[in-house]
Image (cartoon, rainbow, N blue to C red):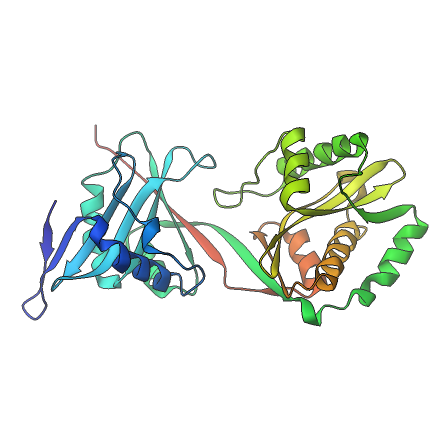
Length: 312
């Protein structure tokens, strides 16, 4: 596939399939495109024989200036292809038109995910007729500024009502793993969701193994019941919230705040320097919890959608 586009004053632009020799250029373009939010290496970019995956590059004057990738979005949207673009914004249209001519079969829509402060991709999706379908948020907290003492009055008040916060571990009773799993399923069912924020449902065994292997989990007990929980994943010097859930019969009492405050106090004492979290903008209660804890909200993530209409 070769598609050339130019104006009398421009060097011609050529769109072609990705080759392994392009890996260094593409890694740089994609890293720059997400403004350093993640760092990509050339080893992550290789030619694929899978017909469901398509990567194209736009080349001008022998230099790769932009790239496009189409791939299945995943279980949260099994009928969708994810469209990712990076590099020189004016080249996106040529890449997109070439991709439309070579779409993998079996999919009915395209989804694109970008941050509202990434103008090249935001502008492209808007101009190309995509719908701003869903929004999600991310937030961070400087643990050096976090004061666990602010939440002791809340802990004392709830303790007098019978609520106690603690951490799960290898010594946790089997009945508590059953209770945590039941609460986990409640959280999966009740959480506001869209393709980029659909929580993963875990079996009891998988949840227990995940918590013991790679997470730190704090729960709130009311006698023999677990009525709130929060899970943290340590990554380097940062911790990331995985799921915070309160039983429907115990909401609006501050239990999610209590659980997260206890988890953040642990992280601060262990020497972690930063905490991050996120979710759908529809999850207003969790936005309020994080505001109380001192999280600073970042630019929103936007998921764009376009239906694939086929004539006849």
